[in-house]
Image 1 (cartoon, one colour):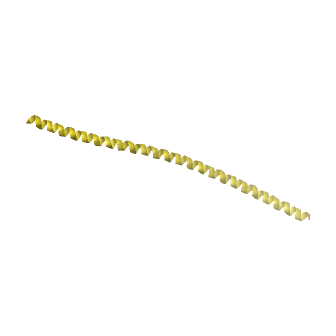
Image 2: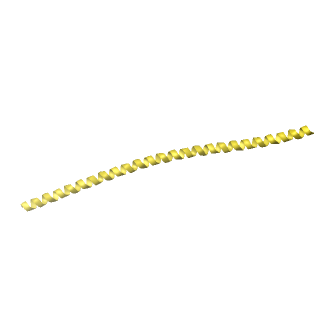
Image 3: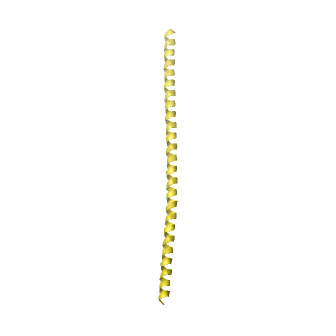
Length: 91
């Protein structure tokens, strides 16, 4: 009977050790997962910031191109009007 009791206590201690090890593993896995989630959140925030900056640059570039086009049209009209005035003055 004593031998069975000793064996049962030994098995119980092994199971307790297993539970502690599993609990420790679970806690470490949870910490790692939370760290990964935090890192992904930071990466997402950085990506959104980069996208926002790129969108702003693209919008400014579009406005710049539109202004260049408007300036080219104005120069063309000025040259045309100037040429017509010059021809008119020669007549």
